Image 1: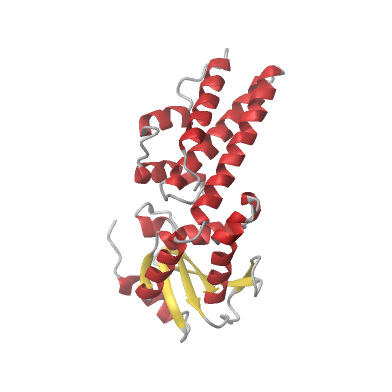
Image 2: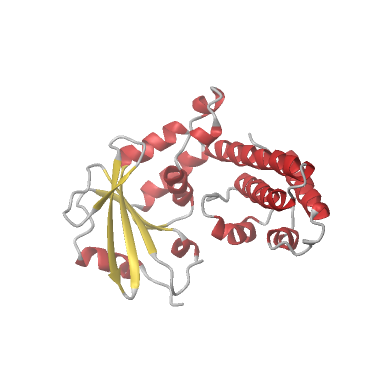
Length: 262
């Protein structure tokens, strides 16, 4: 797949007058920014400015911020679907404030801190391809690393993993092995997400990229082959799934003990 230049990315936006005059930063996010895209992948771009984007062709996406919407432009170019989100700098600052160390030390419930779109946005800032305003992006990446974002998402993932471990144990005791199997799989996914988040690989709301995130993080606690064997249920015996369920739950608890939340 041919590597796109900065001009390749910006030209379709300029042709459609989609770059506001007060743009502070523009950057590619998602799979294309990380080299994980394929011929069917969409292209996602974030633009950041100080004033709301207003155009008759855009749609408003609700966000739990002020103002409570983000404008989105969608178009097709070069046989690709392009999606451009227009964030305000104030939006980004509000998200940073939600994951401050002060908020973390107050004991704010981790799962209630960020909506999925907010968490995904912060995760993408950490792994993006700057097109405009590289200094702005560098500054926000530095500031993000100084927040409690990592600790919040790890705590959230570990909490979810623990909940599904308890579900699986109860379901197995009741003889509901099908449900216990599904709960064990969910517990493992959340535990691995916590492990990857501990290594700075965020994005747990998009499990389709978990294997790629695992390869990028390369954690010492668990090898990729071990991870993939569980993810694909290679040792699962449908006749008696109890040993597989117990092994998966033990792995989840071992991971939880090894991940540093702070």
